[in-house]
Every structure is written in structure tokens, then in C-alpha cells.
Amino acid sequence: MESVYLETTFISYLAARPSGDLVVAAHQKTTQDWWLTRRSEFRCHVSQLVIDEISAGDPAEAQKRLAVIAGLGNLELSPEVISLAGAIMAAGMLPPHAYADAAHVAVATVHGVDYLLTWNCKHLANAQIARQIARVCESRGRRMPIICTPEELMGT
Image (spheres, rainbow, N blue to C red):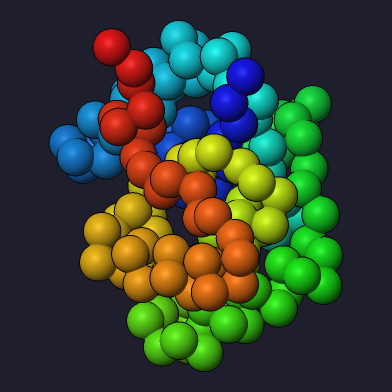
């Protein structure tokens, strides 16, 4: 069975109140469809970084997000993860404020996850940036997971 790392934006779209923005609403619907129809085909994981991020904000909304991930695997933020995240940041393709994005990729990479599922198309599901991050991972003997949106992992 393949594995998926559920990045924070996935969880946020899944648990959020319906948006009035048509694009965001469509992403929410796709996320819900993936969760209902595809989740059982993967081993799904998060990390403490995801837990910390989804715990922020409105306490009632945070509780909804935390309930979504109850029972999912929690991947360790090991020293190797921190080192790889630092190397990704040092490569310069992400702005300094995007360390968490580098850490999401690093945790999924170090733990050998197959897919990183996200709606962050600025820094993660971005073909040019992902290609550069993959080079950093490969230089350290690691294979970066496929970074994609739920739309891309809907299957046939």
C-alpha cells in the first residue's frame, strides 16, 4: 500500500467551513471527495509540524482539524529531517518564511513517503521549485515524494 503525507493545507481544506470563493470551494470539494473515496487506498501520515499548524487559530476550528487527523500516523521530526529541511532552505529556492514548507518535504522524504498531498501551489506543488528540491534530496541519497494536489491523486 502506498503512503501519503497530508500537509497542513489539505487538512485545512478538509475541515473548513465552505468558502464563498469559487476556486477555494472547488478545492474543498475535491479534498472531501479524495478523503471519502481514496483515503482507504493509502497509509496516511502527518507530523508534529502539521499538528502544531492545525492547532493554531480559532479553538473550535482547531478541534475540528485535529479530529480529522485522529488515528493517522505521526512521522517523527528527527535530526535527519531537520538537517534536510536546512539543506532545502540553504539551496535558496524557498523564501526564509517558508521553512515549514521545507520541513514538510523533509519529513516526507526522510520517512520514504510516496506522495505529499497539498494545496500549497506557491512553494510545494510547484513544478519548478519541486524539481530543485528533488535535487537537494537526491544529493543526500534520498528520493523526494511526488508532491501533488488531491486533484492529481484522484486515480482513474
